[in-house]
Figure 1: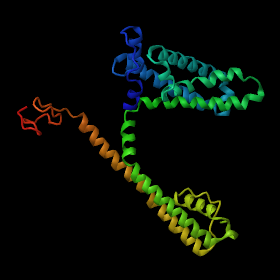
Figure 2: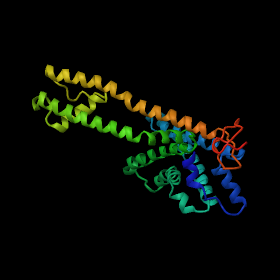
Figure 3: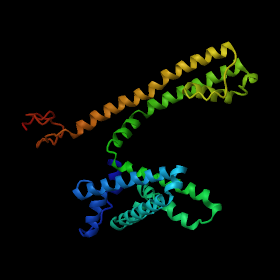
Length: 284
């Protein structure tokens, strides 16, 4: 993923020694050793997150608490070794430790060590909350999602359209909430325009908490219109992002397509089967 590569580009050790080889294994996925390391790390992350989830089930924790405790410490030590190796092999330790993935790597191990310094029953709740932070380990999987860059490009390309869409929805909920406040009034639970706008947002997004319900016939008719509008509005951002993802996917495939460089003008956009340069006409 390009975003991941940009973080660590230029952070390789200068000398070609054991640190450089360790860097290739940990941060590069092009070598067999790097691929095996990534696969092992992904499996470890998934297993550790599974242990966290099982630890949150009271009946399972009571029956297998000691096993889960040992598993947690095993993964904590494993990720501590991994974090230490990353610090050892990079050229700029500060650059790595303050990057997004460096912070996530640190969050993966800190809560378990913090639990050692918070003993006593009065801190059990705090420890439980701190242990939940271990779920951040799953964010480390972002490094290995090759399609994430495609999704990011699509979201960037559709940001203006989505902004206009959100502004339109915001305008709608303000108008609809104000109308419902006028129709229903305080006696039916619509005590203010902000409360009515909250009802409009809940209804338009098809969430439907049901804490505020229109009582008059006109109010129910307006609510029906808002509900129907909600179903049609949901499809708009989905279509925008999907269209941009298709374009981004086409661009990505186009970039990966092999090209022929013209020796005369240096044009790199010639197709593989082209006989002449499309820019200057020189024979390829």
